[in-house]
Image (cartoon, rainbow, N blue to C red; front, side, top):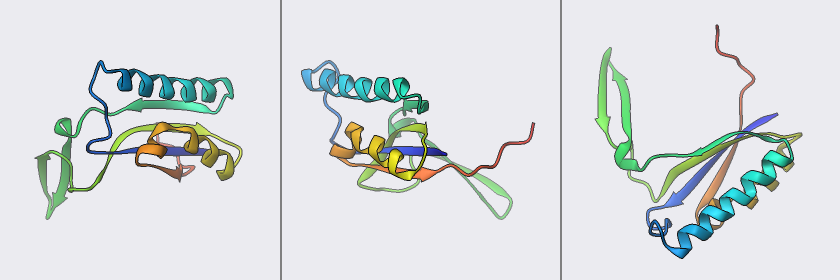
Length: 119
C-alpha cells in the first residue's frame, strides 16, 4: 500500500545554508532516503520551495481567487514529502520515525487512495 509522508517543519527549524548543521541535516535525509531506496519502498520524495513561493487557489461562487502565500498561518509548515509503498501502516510508521522532520516537528502519514487518474 502506498503512503504519503508529509514532512513538516517549524519556522525556525532549518539551519543556515552552508552551515555544519545544514550539512548534517542533509546527510540525515540522504541516509534515510537511501535506506528506503535499498529496501525498495521509496516511490518518490522531495523538498518543497519556501512558503514565499506558495500560491493558493480558491474558487468561490464560480470565481477563481489566486493568493500569493500559504493558505493559513500555522506553527508547522509543509517542507517536503515522501511516498512509500509498504506492506502495512506499521512499516510506513517505522520509516516515518526515521525521517529527521519527525524529530524537529512532525511527519504525517496518510494512505494514498487507490484511485487512478483517467488517461
